[in-house]
Amino acid sequence: MTDFQTVYGAAPAGAWAAPGRVNLIGEHTDYNDGFVLPIALPHAARAEARRRDDGLLRLYSAQGDGAVTELRVDELTPGGVTGWAKYPAAVVWTLRQAGHPVGGADLYIDSDVPTGAGLSSSAALECAVVGAYDGLYGLGLDAAESALIAQRAENEFVGVPCGVMDQMASMCCAEGSALLLDTRDLGRRQVPLDLAGAGLRLLVIDTRVKHDLADGAYAELRAGCERAAALLSLTALRDLPLAGLDAALDRLPGELRPLVRHVVTEDDRVEQAVALLDAGDLAGLGPILTAGHASLRDDYRVSCPETDLAVATAVAAGALGARMTGGGFGGSVIALLAADRLDTVAAAVTTAFRDAGYAEPRTFAATPSAGARRVR
Ligand code: GAF
Image 1 (tube, protein in one colour):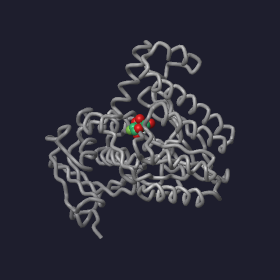
Image 2 (cartoon, rainbow, N blue to C red):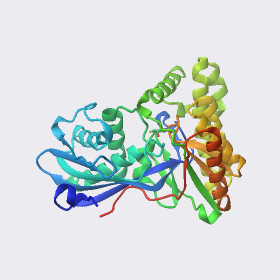
Image 3 (tube, helix red, strand yellow):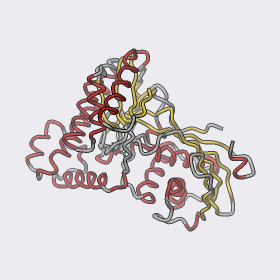
Image 4 (cartoon, helix red, strand yellow):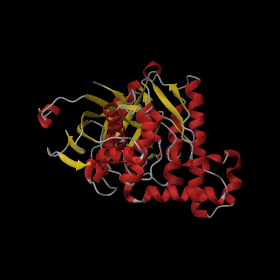
């Protein structure tokens, strides 16, 4: 087996892990200063690392082609690195841009977060590398500072204008809880989510439709929201209360109305979901998930035939509720269900996909897992 020692000829100084996520509710709200409610997945990116003092960044991925990518940290430029290596390179570039005195490193990356599945594999990788650099160079970053470095890496080096949810989820989620995050001030609370105790499971259905947030559609949606907020003289759509929605819609051009309706009702769904979880009514979350999907499908228009089929089939087969999770345009669906319906619902979706001529979906049950941490 190839390991750090075999690739680099010495032992790593340590290992840092950061998980992928699914978002329970609160989609496309994070770049509107709104609320999100993600959980961390058990799947994580892991970075074994050793500091180098010659300015070289060497990168190896256990999921890659066996080659070591070698970069000079002082020559890193946005757009200058392609493939998976751009994510660790982005973090090192961003740390230096932010004034942190960091140099080179040998990194051995191993991740089991499915890529292109809307499960935040890139945020997991970035957060693991932030953790490694924080440890190697003694930066003393706290979780929110680390997440903001990872988000800036994605925005400025990778070129995706994402919000902060995925990086905050990876850094700050805790086992057994969902993370209620206010993306305006990064205020957060761990909301206990004992699915097993309530006799429930959360099924993740990766539709295998690869999505790519860099393709421009996400940026357009974000720009549309910002234009609507400006037209309404608001700092962000988060500042539009549900009670004022209809009056505000009348003041907007037709093409922006559905975007605003989604964002404002979605923030309200987060609030409703948290109230139910606080009251111990986990099953009550189901209809909120399904309503969230309808809003993403009909108003925000980021679902696709495969995610719509997965949601409809899961609900018809007995799930309490289901929705696409993440940015959309493919990716994954989550379904909340009674524990004894897990296999039935997974099988129903698999059969429906086969009948529709779609690729076989990957299904697994997710438990709320730990956020980023040093593992060795
Ligand atoms: C992607 C983005 F990276 C997040 O910031 C968020 O906007 C999400 O899509 C939609 O809620 O995962």
